[in-house]
Every structure is written in C-alpha cells, then in structure tokens.
Amino acid sequence: MEGNDFLGEDVSSNVQRYEKMVRNKTKDYFDTEAMEGIIDYYIQTVKYKRAIEAVAFGQELYPTHVNFWVKLAEVYVLQNKFELAQAELDRAELYEPFNPDLFLLKGEVCINLGELEDAEVYFERALMHTDERLDMLFEIAYVYDENDLFLLAANYFKKIIEEEPALEQAYFELANCYSMVYQNEEGIKWINKLIDLDPYNLGAWYNLGVIYGKMEQHREAINAFEFCLAIDEEYSIARFNRANALVELDEFEDAIKDYIEVIRIEGGDSISFCNLAGCYERIGELTLARDNYSKAAKINPNLAEAWFGIGITFQKEGQYKDSLVFFKRALLLEPENAEFLLVMAECEYQLNNFLEAESLYKRLLDADPGMMEAYLDYSFLLLKMDRIDDAIQLIETALTFDDECHQYYYRMVVLNYLSGKESAALLYLEKALSLHFHDYFLIFDIAPELSKVTAIMHLINSHRG
Image 1 (cartoon, rainbow, N blue to C red):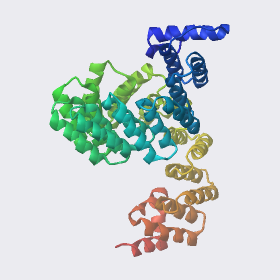
Image 2 (cartoon, rainbow, N blue to C red; image 1 turned 45 degrees about the horizontal axis):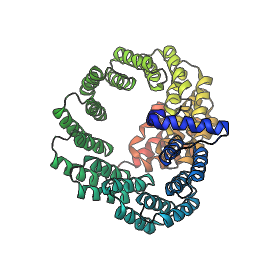
Image 3 (tube, rainbow, N blue to C red; image 1 turned 45 degrees about the vertical axis):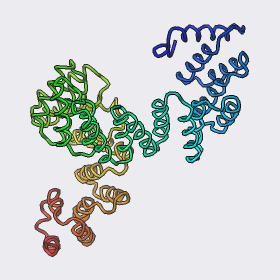
Image 4 (tube, one colour; image 1 turned 180 degrees about the vertical axis):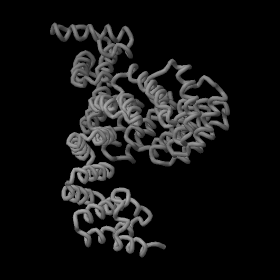
C-alpha cells in the first residue's frame, strides 16, 4: 500500500481495515487516534478527497472531537481553500481555545490570505499555549519558509538560536533563508558563529563552502571544504564539492584527483564519472574522458550529458560521423537542449550535411529564439549555401531580440558587403564599432578580403583611440 514506508504497522493496518469497511459499505469502530492516523495517511499520500471522507466518518463517530476539524482545515489549506479552512478553525477554537496546533494553522491561513499581522498574533498564541516551544518555533519558521517569506522565517530561526545556541540545524536553516534572498554575507556571519561555538562542526564548514560557491567565491569555498576534509578525510561530499570548485577555477588536474578519490570512497556514480570525464576532456585526455563518460552512461543510460560527452570527444578528434551517433542519443533524452542542438548542427556542417544542419538550427531557434550563437552559426551556414539574402533576414530577426549585440552588426557588415550593399555595410560597421571597437576582426574571420577595402579600413582607423 502506498505510504507504508513512512507509516507504522498500526496505521497501515487501520487504513486497510478502514478501506475494507468503505468497500463493503459497512460500519466499523475506530478510536480517535486510529482515525487521525488514517486521515494523516491520506494527507501524506495526497489523497485529499479520501482524507475529507475519513474526517466525515470520524465526525460521525466523535462529533465533538476538535482535531477532526483541525485536520479538515489542514486539507483545505493544502487545496488552497483558505476561507473554508478558516471557518473550520473558527469552529474548533470555540471548543478548544488553547490548542497550539490550531493557532499554528490559523496563522498559516492568514499568511495565505495576505494577513501577516494577524498571522503573527496567532503564532504568538501558539507559542503561548504549547508545551514544546522549540518545536513550535521551528514549525512557525517553516510555515514562513514554505510561503517564500524568508526574512520572516529567519527571525524565528534566530529566536531558536537565542534559546538553544548549540542547535546547528537552526543555523543552517537561517543561512539558507538569507541565501534565498541573496543575502549570503549574512548567512556566512551566522555559520561563522556556529563555527566559533563548535570549530569541528563538519556541517558548518560544509555549509560555509556551499554558500561561498553560490557567491562564486570558489577559493573561499575550497578553503571551507578543506577544513571539512581536515576533520574527516573520508567526507566525500566535501571532496566532491571541492572538485567542483576547482573546475570553476580551471584547476582540472587537482579536480581529477578529488573525483577519483570520491569514486574510491563511494564506489562511483554517474555524476562523478561524468564530472571526471569533463576534466579529462578539458586537458585534452580524450581517451580517458571517453572511458569515463562511457562508465557514466553505463550506470545511468538516461544521463544525456554522458552520451553528449562521448560525442564531444569524437568531435574533438575530427571523427564527426562517430560523434553524431552519440549526439543523437543525447538528443533523444533531451530533445530541446540548446547546447546539444548547436553542437550537433556544427557537426552536420562539418560533414557537409547542410540541410540537416539547417533543420537543427531551426529546431534550436524554436527552442531558444534569442540564442546568439545559433543566429551567427546559422547565418554562416546560409552564407556557405550562397543564400546571403536569407542570412541577412535571419540576422535582422536576431536584432529584434537584441539590438545591442555587436556581433550581429559585424556579421551584417560581411553579409551586406558580399551582397553588393556597400553603403548598408558601412552603416552597420559604424554601429558595430561604436558598440565594441576591438572586435572588428570578426568581419575578417568570415571574409578576409574585406581587409583590403579602403572604405572599411578607413572607418575602422577613424575609431581608433
């Protein structure tokens, strides 16, 4: 039965007995605790209609049992029926005016109705009447967090820390709240407070490294992960993340050592093999790269990146036919992946399969209509196919997405000059030079003969500083 993994045997047995009763259209006896367990089962397995039916049956048995109204309100909240939830909770409060769970749920309803001040009032009542204050502070914080009110959640995590300064989970949750609102420096401050309390806290050093990674301060992230490894050299997740940070700094040889060690410790998964392969690829060890991409693909045949990586190694060796086989496999898994489409189109071009390449560029621009590389590569293909007017029209379309892209203007210089529109070419050159002078060489990469055109060289020279 669904949900048995997280429910006890008694609850599972009660659910089975309850469902048998419903099927047979009979009446059976369940105590209140059993009925609450059944309702919770349906809530946790997202069977809200059955949960409501179970509440109704429970109310038949126990008309004044307030928790059934609270459970019904909980279902209504999950269904975004906040007014109905509020009505159930108001009714329950008449019978149990000191129920902390009731006030917690009332606060959540108020948040969803945009009544934040009222929510705070109910949360204070929940705290006033609970015997488990710390747990309730966490519950309130999570309600705010789940509703993307991260700074309000942070306030409650701070209260938890004030009352239990050594409770590490509160620090981690607090840092995550600040991360969600891009206040990572504030998160770092709190993680450092935990480290001051407990210098050998693995989780603190690890979270510190993760935050620095999000801030793209990769050297600081590496330092934090190294503290983790100094505490426990077998802490593979820190080693894996250190390897990722090293990749960001182009320190591939060191990253390779870390990935190999992670694979030794953990036995190797598809992502580790794929990342290791990527490092080998970047340093030109294409055979080792291909071997490790293949290992990743064998472990997880649905990992498109692994198949794509194998194709890249063949492409870099100039074996375009072989690379196409693996690019096609990757595209089957991720048909709209822009990177895959772009590289595969280039591969078809290298094989002089111009029509196949054009079809891929069209698919690519359908998937990502503003992709600069696609417009530039596609226009180059059209130029090679002697379809200059089509290429001009294509770049005109590109300019509707980004009229400040200097690469487009430099491409229009080439296309217009080669089509005999010299005046238009010079106007585009003027615009391109004003946007980004130092990339004027782009026109000569496509058409070296333009370096001998006096008007073009004069205009370029006139823009030199």
